[in-house]
Length: 147
Image (cartoon, rainbow, N blue to C red; front, side):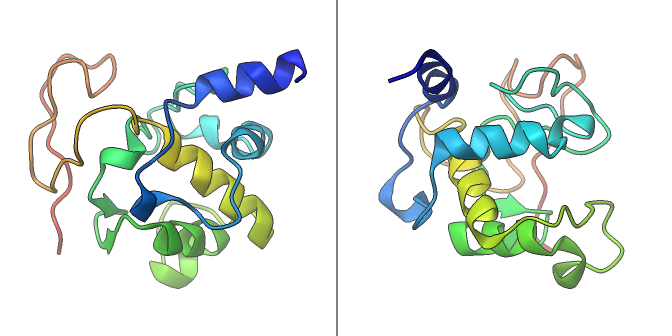
């Protein structure tokens, strides 16, 4: 294996549970997609250099989240659809259409589902974040609720 590939794999927390695995997705390739498409311009993303922006929600521990965009179940098929065309799912959302191919969306989703996969069970919507789970902001925050 090459050094960049080893570093990319090290950035992924762990293999997600079977229900969160993205068919045809490659987490290491997804980390590259997320970095190249500039996702860090809006999101805090562990393992992606320079991804420290708070314009959008932080993507820390993605695999533990119950909801996507506060409205959709956080499942592989839903995340891939969101990455392909967020405006179709939630017109007017601040999330832009990045022009990803199906393969890129699957890889990016596989990478996101690897973030936090080595931690405890999924956290249901509405449950407060644990200290340190919400990034550098000291104030407590709540996970989004359905609806």
